Image (cartoon, rainbow, N blue to C red; front, side, top):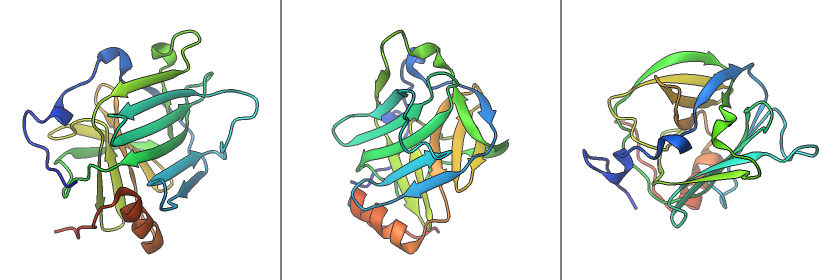
Length: 196
């Protein structure tokens, strides 16, 4: 489904403060693996953390859990984002909201661990998630980025979008191959629109 954001759109509403992913710091840039297999839109792994063997990650999931789910795995001791899996995403925008991006540096964000309570392990945020595939860049927005100043922290071909208060607002994956683009289109069941 192709959808535009407008003032008052549900995606523009903020979700509960206690469940926002607050970024405390940025770790040094590390290796990044990006997989677009046509089944899941995208799987991004940082620092070779394909699967923890000595620790179980904390999970922060966002989406409406019917048409959209994005799962972010967090190291339980450092808060470092170790994996992002876009499991389901079928609300695609034709254009990105207008936001100003300021470079924040290079590296992987470290999330505040305060939202995970003892033995919880997973936070689910029920909010619409939107994607946008333009040219060779795939963007995923967790909430309204319109008219915001966002800092962009880059790690390889992945850029994290963080607002002035340190809240993670989404991410972008750039320099996609033609095969990756076709796989994302297939996984989201969407056409691709050229940049104007």
